[in-house]
Image (cartoon, rainbow, N blue to C red; front, top):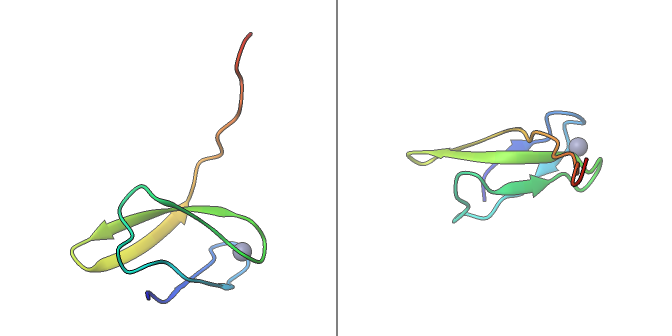
Length: 57
Ligand SMILES: [Zn+2]
């Protein structure tokens, strides 16, 4: 387990040990999605870009 906290509400976010870069983890408390970045053995998270569903025009 990595010790990460939500960038929005500071709640703990648990990520699996085998998490890989680009995975999306969701905060249990506020629902904010975070994109995981793994460098060496360091796991960090950043706010995931909101994907707007703009299918069709
Ligand atoms: Zn949160």
